[in-house]
Image (cartoon, rainbow, N blue to C red; front, top):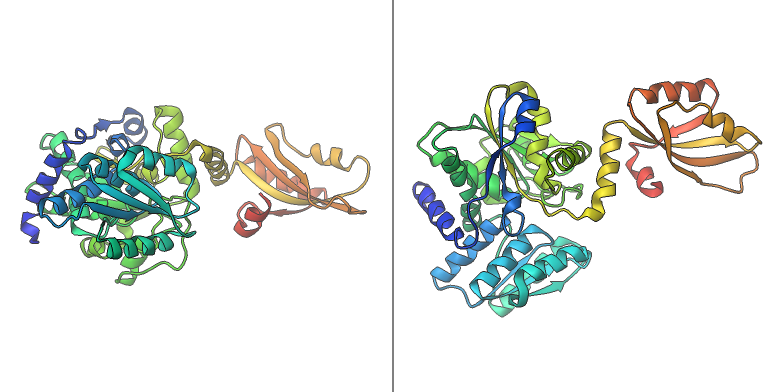
Length: 419
C-alpha cells in the first residue's frame, strides 16, 4: 500500500461505516472552553453503537477481507474490552460467524455486552488468566479453523479504519484547521491513523499531543529509547489503554515525535477528570476515554485562545468501579489519607486521639489490626478532609502528642494489602 492513496482508502472506510452509524458528534464544550480559555471540542467516540471508536477498525478489517474474497466466513479476535464489542457488532452486521477469546478473569458485564452486540453471530470463549493466554488461543484457532484473526491495532486496515475519525473532524470543522489535536494512545492504532490522515491533508498541519496512562507509558518509553520497547510491567487500571507495547505499525508513524509530545496522565488525576465530567457535564467516560480531556491539566499554559480537539475514545464504564474511581481521585487530590497508628491500650486513649481531629476531618475507615495487644493497639485509619492543607496541621498534632503513626497512602504494596 502506498502512502499517497491513504486518504482515499480512509474515505472509502468512512463511507462504508455510514452503513452502521452516522459521524460521531464534534461538540464545542462550554465548560472546558471557559475553564481553559480556549475553544475546546470533544470528538464523541463514546457515542458510537458500541460506545468506542474500536468498531471502526474492526469493521474496516472485516469489510476488506470480504471484498477481496479472502474471508472463509469465520473471524476471531482476542480482547476483554472495546475491541471485542466492535468485533461482535461487525460480525452481526455482516452475518458472519465470529469467536471472541477473553481471559477467564473478564468481568461478567463485559462478556454480556459483547454477547449482546454480537447476538447469535458470535461465540465467547474464556481462556487463561491474562490477555496473552487468550491471544495465543485466538491465533491457534485462526490457524486450525481457517478463521481470519482481527487484530486490535497493529494492522494497516485497523489503522485505516481508525483514521476515519480525523476525516470526520475536518469535515465537521468545515475547513477550519484546529490548532491542536489531542489523542489517547494504547496500542496506537487511533493516534497513528489520525496523524497519517492529517499528514496527507492539503491544509495546515495541526499540532499533535498524545496521552498515555502514567502506569503504561509504552509510546513515551519507546520514543525515549528510540526503538519499540516492551514494558516489563504496567498498571492495568486504564484498561482501554494499558498496553505493554505499542504496535509496530503505529510506532513507525509516531516515532518522529518527541517524548515531550506524549503526556502521561496520573491514574488518580484521571479519576478526578472522570468524576468532573460525570458530575458537571453528565458524560460517562471509561478511564481511557477521559485521557484526552485529562491532558488539559498539562496543557493549560499553552492553549489559551486556541482551537483544541480532544478525542473522547470510549464510554464503556462499569459503575461497580465507581467507588474505586472516587477513592483514587480523593487520594490524588490529597483529600484522603490512610495511616497505621499505635495507640496506648488505656481508658480514654481513643477519646484523646479523636480530639486531635479538626472540624473538617472525617474518619472514613477505622479498624483494629491487632486486637490482642496488651500495651498498644495497631489501628488502620482512613481520614477524609475538605481541604488538603488540613493534613499537615493534623500530622503536626500527631507528632506533638507523641502519636506513633505511619502514612501508608502512597505505599502501594501496604495499601493494597490493608485497604
